[in-house]
Image 1 (tube, helix red, strand yellow):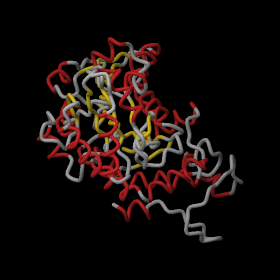
Image 2: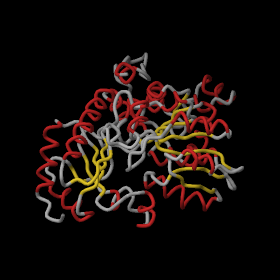
Image 3: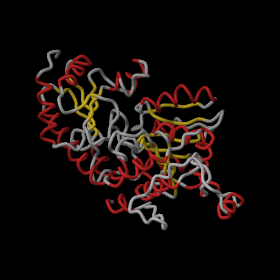
Image 4: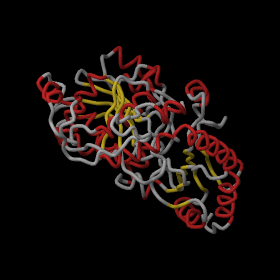
Length: 390
């Protein structure tokens, strides 16, 4: 995968022959006979006309993501939420219905539960691990499933083969958010999923310095999503694309360390007397361990969720005591970040909505970076030892 990360999608400008894909920092391009032909043939997306529609630097990123996820086509966006919104709205219309899950990133949850209903689009939220509930929730007007391959923040793994089987039986489209697992650990398209979305801000870029999104999947769907992107204006700018393409070159190396650190820290936390529960797919105590072993051959990501005895107050005190691990929202960067979903990623949800999702008091979400695991464990240990509210 490292070779794909480094070399796929490279843009070689024959006039200059730079090793690195250049930043085409231009809003518009000179029109040639070749570009006019593309426009007349209806191939506007392949033409260099206007950066909102397409840009060579963006295309380099899209080709790289297409190769990493092994999809037919890919499209880059200004954010993960722009990618998700354009994907959903390219398929759904007034009167349609989708099925998603309670255990979902807060931004996606608000979009599905509050914004889509204002457009006349209905949804049913289910337990993503309950296949019978999922199938029984399908209606005549159901058009798609939207799930996360590894849910945020409770880290439930999705049974992709079974989900795809149900979707095909009912002629539904499947959209999977693969941000947490990444194509390094899991490629949903290989199981028959139609579209994969990412917040490329996270592991794909890996340096916490851009906001970006990506969609990969079947070409006919990507073409429809492109039309929504052009109209809604969610396209990625060239400098974002340059930084993302650079970050992707070290993607495989970084994921190896994220996986290793996640496993080691989860094992340490599980032994700690002040931790009530640890959620990590690589632990034998993980409720879906058999499925995790089947799907996640290379690793389980660097995301670890755990509940601290003493509730939210103890969790907040623990985070303030940390010295190396930074207290911040987001994830997937080279630096370790810690947050509590109740006041960050899921703050827009009501207390009842969080309770229904299973976000209990004291739940902490840790994004393990690429620092030395020993240093991270030492930092966690000293921070826990200084908590006074048990």
